[in-house]
Image 1 (spheres, one colour):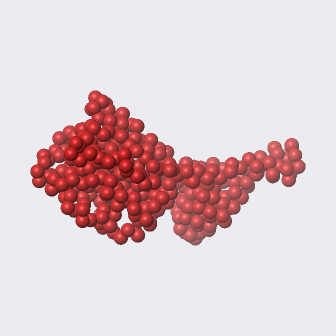
Image 2 (tube, rainbow, N blue to C red):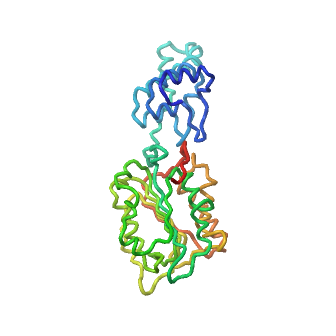
Image 3 (tube, one colour):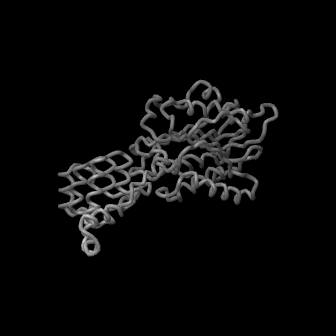
Length: 356
């Protein structure tokens, strides 16, 4: 019900419910507000006669008035305020008139309207179309030239792994298997399948790498070292992702290398980044030969189980930590580091895309 005024009139005449909620909790009023359809709002004002229809909170726990204020759709904000005022006046005018003059009553009623909550200022914007919310690049090295196969790791990508979890987050998922160190040294992940400017239309970026490794690096399929910081830097230096949340997920052992000590103390972390590691420095990272990596499966399960309409993404991490601790008897501790400056909310999108 997001079309023009004539369209909404036809739908209503056919018996369409004007206050139906979709799976993210949004109503036609909220969607029309977000898309700035003034004519639709005018038509809905004729049929939405309950105050709760106008104050209902959907995605991001925001009402239509709060969306109008946030997106600076001033004409729609005025229409919504007028409709709320009218409904409140109808319900309270008689009682208010007994206590004070009519002008004072009107002012008192208006004063009871809650101020629009400008809460989105403390959250990262997630307003892109479902097709462009963001990209999740998964790199899963399973087979190696001179190192043991990561048995069970194939379960960590597709239907039984992170693919489904990232789709739930509204991301377009790209999966790459068995990439060599030479590949990483000669390609920029950001521009693998698109021009960097395409990220201007995206709200979030996710990079997940899974392989053998030690602290500070993973192993390519050819056995060569792939340093993580230069890899992360490719993402951090993308101008089109500036000010947007960038999530880095690393599934690998993090034993300390004596021949190539990690220089983590000298690393300069970019802003708006979240780093999630399957284990703390100095620890091994567990993997079941049948069901996959303990951390990846726990992360996937928590994302799929979460009500993302109300749960901030980083609030899932303590549950992942607890689950991995339980499954490894305390031998593996998931760690994370953040330079995020706002809340990272990833509510479900209207359309769940599949990997093309």
